[in-house]
Amino acid sequence: MTITSHLFDLLIAPFIEFSFMRRALVGSIALSIGAGPIGVFLMLRRMSLVGDAMAHAILPGAALGYLMAGLSLGFMTAGGLIAGFVVALLAGLVTRVTVLKEDAALASFYLISLAGGVVLVSLRGSNVDLLHVLFGSVLALDDPTLVLLATSASISLVSLAILFRPLVMECVDPLFLRTVGKSGGISHLGFLALVVLNLVAGFHALGTLLSVGLMMLPAFAARFWSATLDGMIAIATLIGIVASGFGIIVSYHAGTPTGPTIILSAGVMYLLSILFGQRNGLILRLIPRKHLAA
Amino acid sequence: MTVSRAGSVQLHDLTLGYDRHPAVHHLDGCFQAGSLTAVIGPNGAGKSTLLKAIAGSIQPLGGSISMGSGKARLAYLPQLAELDRDFPISVEDLIGTGLWRQLGPFRRYSNDNKQLIADALEQVGLSGFNSRLLGTLSGGQLQRVMFARLIVQNAEIILIDEPFAAIDTKTVTDLMGLVQHWHGEGRTIIAVLHDMGLVEAFFPECLILARECVDWGQTSNILTPDNLAKARTMIEANDPHADECERAA
Image (cartoon, rainbow over all chains, first blue to last red; front, side, top):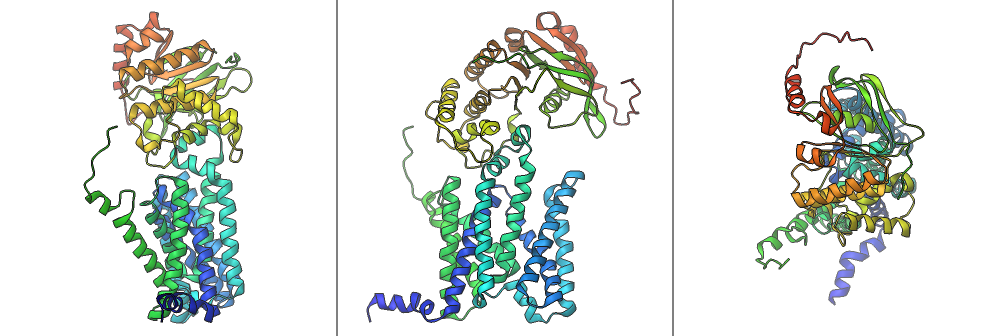
């Protein structure tokens, strides 16, 4: 057997043979496209842990949806979105009217929310259901879920295009944006809404906790390949897509759970980027090179 | 470029502060349209607070601020600390944010806009720096970029807060040239400064602030050792358990 046919069997054939593999791939690509750019902004705004907090915050909403209608896509999505938005708004409110800073406000509400969520899930659910909410089921994506993932990616891209300029200004020079207009608060809330949307879409595939991984790890890796915002966004999206495909295929052959394997793939790409990245990668730093004349 | 005369800033019994403690106390007066005023005083005198309030980013505890006739455009350059220099944005794009009022979130840069940005870069002596990233600039270069953004903002009222802290003489000279150029164009300029030599040499008007107004008028008349000493003693009298202010509004 030639190497190419070997590679074909290894990498392509499973996708041709099984529709659940194709669905998993399409779903996680959609997720990467939506979440990648958002992860870059979170990282640049030093809000890397906000995704994590938000993922926890979503849990009680999804759990409430589950309590009302079982494993229903619509109810769990709506519940997750509402819980996420409520926590984002409350945290924003507390930040504005009290002495607490945003990280403290967000942490407080996500902790309350998470505890509530766990209580709700354990009230009725079995452990299998809890596992579904926490770790998703990327190999069981049905049509409505795929549509949801694609819709979320589309909404994210369009909204980011709309918010892009004020968002960048908010990052670099928030005070300036405040003196020339009122859009700082709107763009900030809109951006948080996008974070919530992507995490809620993501939890159907990867679960509430791991969906943050596909948002943040590619962004961190991208920092080692590009110095510009556009470059980072493109590379983060690409890394997310590659990690998805790679994770799915590895989990197929190795028999490991797919969601975590996707995130582990992204983790491996992140570690490789730290080592080999062309911008401040560690290896490059070890190679002695003469400095430039000017 | 000519600028209309709508650009005066009036302060009416203005009190500003934090946590009900006044940082600026019962300040009355007017920055005339087209005036060039230095705001001086010891640290903690309320200079930056005054600029923030004029820029509209904090609300007065008492009194009010009004801007002459019509709606004057205002540009505000705060102290450097408020900028995230690690963010990957080019010099050109940062200066472009000065066009926010015209372009809003969506409109593209027109060729005129691009020319304006290039001209501004040339005026601050940074031609060719268009695509340099913010993080690669020195302190002085960054301040030149911030002045370039002030240029494209084309505002009638310009507020600058300690623009020359940790800046070398050459850069100060270049940027002061710009300030004088703006003054010649009839813009109202209010600058917080610590360098008395600079104030004496270039600023016709001066406001000496020490929470209260120590003196406000022509620099040559009021910039006296007496006034400066007075400013220093006034600011030391800070009482954390102060009673509510009974002074009539």
